Length: 256
View 1 (tube, one colour):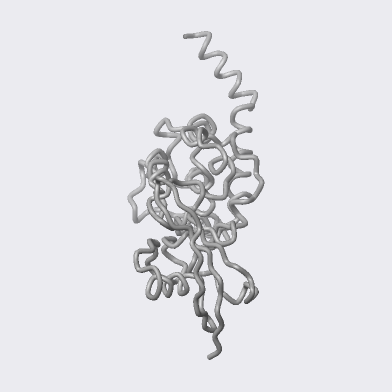
View 2 (spheres, helix red, strand yellow):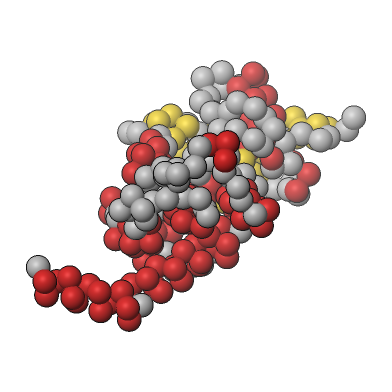
């Protein structure tokens, strides 16, 4: 096994401030960035804070930014970098720093609670659900999400404009709305819930300008923009500007 010395800059600090710290560390063949962070902890900075769990790209815990790009530390191989390159590891920029590489991502869980869950069809028991395979496949893509929140971090609506967070759910949760709205058994409409309207009015669908940056960083290769956000936008626009819906709203307002 061959090895070499790599130069790392790892952000150290907390909510009060901080900056990059320099480390020279040994790298072995086949290692990923998380291995190197662990080696830095073991040999040079035992108090370095980093969040991780599965080390298999399935828990989403070790999200950070490597050379400015949102990535999973455990899925970023050292072999993709030039051996002479300085590798910079920083916390997710869109969320408040707790300490070092650990950020407070509670914003995402708050947004998750704002999305109304699946509404079961009233006349069917759970064992009686029947769906076409193509509908299963469409929803299944979105369920591959590991909630790493890299898409939330890279979305410039959240990343560059803190004031938008109150009105914008972000791509991960608009994808959840799209999944439910596309679900053939979701009875939200019968329960009085218009998912297309709430996506636009309550979750900030109009803020998304489909730059596809969320899709580019997704470690599960979910086509968030093409398969979720754009179809949801189309459905919301069709609903809002449907002439029959417009006429019905006019009539209801007149009766009121």
